[in-house]
Image (cartoon, rainbow, N blue to C red):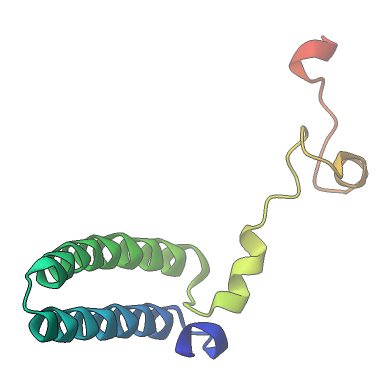
Length: 108
């Protein structure tokens, strides 16, 4: 539930980690209940996946903070790319004050 309603990127990543730990606990319990080790093997792979997810996720959060000085995910709307000349909606961007019309590679 925290992934859906929170706006802080760190809290969202903590919520994902909590969900992965809940799955680990469930798999371990069923592995002990059934008497086989397959659930514990899955727990090992989920822990490796969670470690990789934390490393990549924190790197992304640090880069977002460096660019926006905020970790609020509502601020990330500024990162949407609507301004590329080859994407739809180019006409509105060409009329903007920021873009000075220059020839595209095929128009020279």
